[in-house]
Length: 174
Image 1 (cartoon, rainbow, N blue to C red):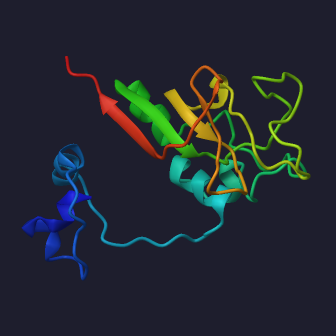
Image 2: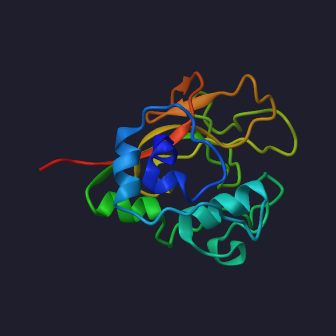
């Protein structure tokens, strides 16, 4: 992020910022609390994502283990509020790009209804239906995929698409 090269931030870190242009993130950083480092108390894919989205420990978010078809107990709870729910309610237009891996897979492939999105056992990949997206109105994501150089993504309407990454929430100007 570009703000790490700005004087107010550069003096707090022992690394050099990348030469990138991120004006909106730079402005957001000036208006926010910026942490120079952070540590996870559960550095495992799905549980860590659950903590980032909810602020809860894995046993409270519903995601204590990596999600796969043999672990139906590990799926992000639908009855809790996530950071994206808060942003969406505050008027931000939220989009999710990349690996989600917060729900156990169910046979809900948009292109092949009543089938999983992969044939591997246990199934780890998942299509996330709109009612489980917690405030994200725009979607370009997948659950988990082992071939990291050839992932597949579903768009907002459930069509299989090509790769992208990131998370974005933008406030509508009024």
